[in-house]
Length: 361
Image 1 (cartoon, rainbow, N blue to C red):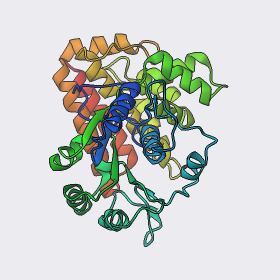
Image 2: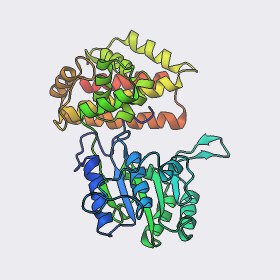
Image 3: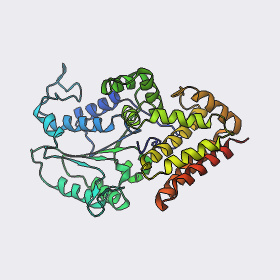
Image 4: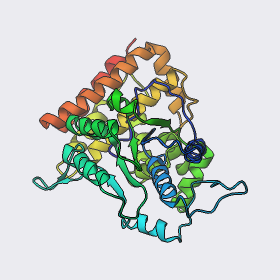
């Protein structure tokens, strides 16, 4: 649940969004017209199925010439039968003409890299320069394209400027604003919207059939229509933690500092680093929801009882701009604390004092 507060843009930004069906239709129509661009950019919040769509696009493009058509002679959807050899080989990573690029473990530190490095993109250049192993398309998916470091981004830009024949790049991005404008301009951009509440609950229920119905609804609302994010939250006890956070701030600007110190002590323990990260992300998520709900940019519903009433009171009392500013400051505080290894309890205390200052008229 490391990125539960991250949005593609700021907490109150808007974008033109389309659903997954519209995105599939756009790809189908482009393929039918034989005007396939060399690169597509699929953006939107985490956990809404962007990688799933990228794999569907890849399987479909590989299948051209063998897929059955609909009544009018063209494919009616991107669906490829799961029992097919193509589907199974891609699922197992055994298709010679497909590459997936994502952050990998650094051999020197044995830890996951924080970025996609230039050598990974240069490898793609060599991959695309070769003849297709199966005589057709060569396709690469970059998962988390905004995580490329500057050298990797420039290497990708060169690839986009001189794309080889029958090559297709699918860029999946949770934050397209962090990509070079020149990269975005060379891609067909599809901005995907989260699922509606009913559809997201259906997906969550299918994946977690033992989940309590009210908890599922709360998780979907908290994840704002992202089933993947809702499942990550469920695994980390996110809904319970969110309820505990709101209980501590419900009387702002008044705070129970004995409870704040107890929380800081608990999160500062050596074995509680994961719980600390969850708490920081829940705090940023609450501030993000508070700001966007106060701006009227989403029809906010209670993820936990009393959330909407609290948001209304706080944004009316001191104004929206101060909460947006605090959202940015808490994000900066968390990043600085990570870089210089600050005492976790001090971060917690500082965050609550900032909440108290902001909530005072």
